[in-house]
Image 1 (cartoon, rainbow, N blue to C red):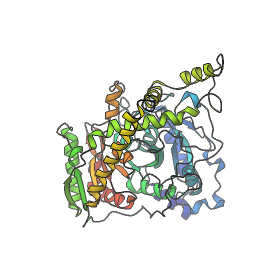
Image 2: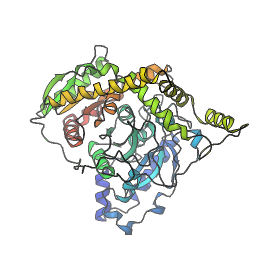
Image 3: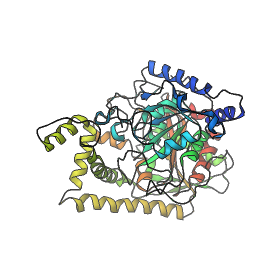
Image 4: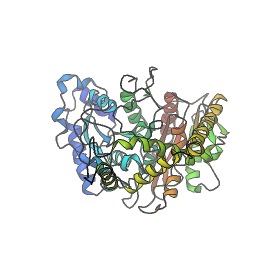
Length: 477
């Protein structure tokens, strides 16, 4: 099911700004597409606003905004002042934040209209949305398959034509992987480029707000709107002024694109390799120089990530204790109340990661696991620095090792964790990275991943614009 609102965000905003389109026209179309999507069982949304224009005031400058009248969706771990912020968890079911995230505020101030909050893996821990407490979202290209995760609902909302852009969050690939599975564009900026204020923390040194778009330009427009310094609210927000990302397709003369050999192993699906080869030839046709490179510590990325991320989640999720907000299950004394609340409120995957994180941070194991993982993370960062210092401007890889898998197919947690094998490195190294559709395998979309040096999101999007233009309709076949 992919019929819906198919116009780009930029074209929508231009129509509203010029007065040729009524401010609510695209929102009405989005609500109709949303109703069709949910009637089809896609379960992309956990909460929706039946009257999203009720708090929107076109007379207050919104028609001049970059997203005037554009319907948007936001992942349910990014705080909004009106709809729920449940993080896909029973422990926060029905919770409405008393404040608004910086990313949501910037979307609103740009004139966009929030139609709903999207389905996600509980507390962003998962790669399939199968760990949502409110049921999984389903891939619109084949509802028997996962849409990816943890931002699966946002990817589905864009792929199903509900809205041209949506917000997600990334800790280890949670925007890029569902974008690849659903055949849309997904972009993770450099850590610090977008404020994390109002993003419910999973792993604070890895979390990033990202964007989905139907096209590269949709994603670039959304990122331009939400990016920028916010040091008063987020101490990790970068203070440098960000250049505009949005541009247009052009030549890549003088651009060196690296192909890391570790991302193209002999075990890679031959059909995915063929699609990647075709994408590389498209970059070459645009003038890019292609060079094989090596990132030798890539093999350690997944185990490193699954030590650092659970350790940080163990600390961050300690605040959900039944005392301050959210679910409370009464017990015989404070400790019993803690145990009952967290046992009933957290699902199996969140519990697994809390226990793992607590273990690696415990006395006697902190040095052996957590500190060692931090050291390997620095080696992974150094690999990327060396490649970029050697004259490579961007890297191209598959986004995922497979197309979308069937529900229940990866029941082993370790197998599920390996589905992030090509994406976690960008989070560990704090690099910008994005996924662009490059074709289909067995009728299912797959994505090609572009990575760039820290804060060179403009260079990354330059490659993405060119690749999208060169592949054209082939990107969706």
